[in-house]
Image 1 (spheres, helix red, strand yellow):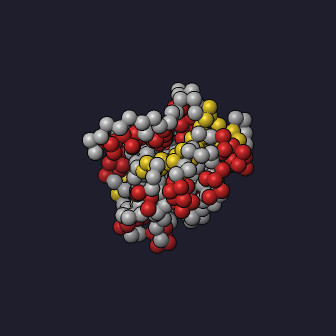
Image 2 (image 1 turned 90 degrees about the horizontal axis):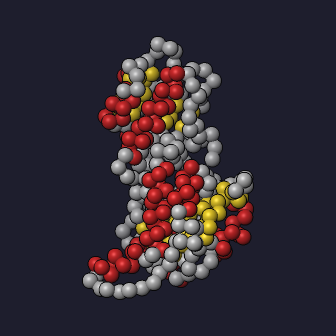
Image 3 (image 1 turned 30 degrees about the vertical axis):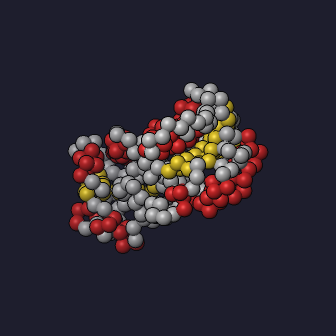
Length: 315
């Protein structure tokens, strides 16, 4: 924002999706007035139409139609409750700034990535099935300690995954769109993938990352390597992954799929060497509170005339 969003004594109207978030934002200051409204309710009316900040619902909120934005002539900021911003980036009206909740889901998503990696490496899904069947079946699987781990995505979550995995004495390699100190460029993946025992994908959704993990990417991975997808389902070519799993050459652990939710009868459900969780990587106790805190911090910045945090210009 080049100019303050509100004057020193002006009320800041905010559109929020829940009563709990309304209470949280109004606790920021007497100058904040919350209006509970969902895009599913249609265009805002009455006082809600004065809102300068809109907080969409979490859990796969979609961009509303033009009538919704037309009913918000003063809208200047869309503040997401998630780190992922692919449904909104580049699709908002002119003059509206998009911000995400970077950091709110970092520890929980990183924890999922480490948990899924450990579970897949040590064969926990196999042993759970054997327990359900009442069978005592000793078997040696894989290990994480000392493994070569390639983290594709070197943002906040990727770095946190790396810090958590460092305790297992893994050999870490980071990859991002462009190379920098300690980080390789995605153009180097053909040379890096054949060396990795575990490949963790934690990239945002962009034109460049949709289908990044395609048949060529998977073919470059070493035999029996583990793919861990903590990003979004569209980053991985589902058919290519199914082919590798069915052939028994690769293993995978995913929290996201394409399509999502995964429909009944989809071949991923029965694919061998695959651990699936239903997009719950960021869902732990306290997640909603951290997301609300990110919104509150943003409103405090606006009231104080300070620069916005976590602005999504481009990935």
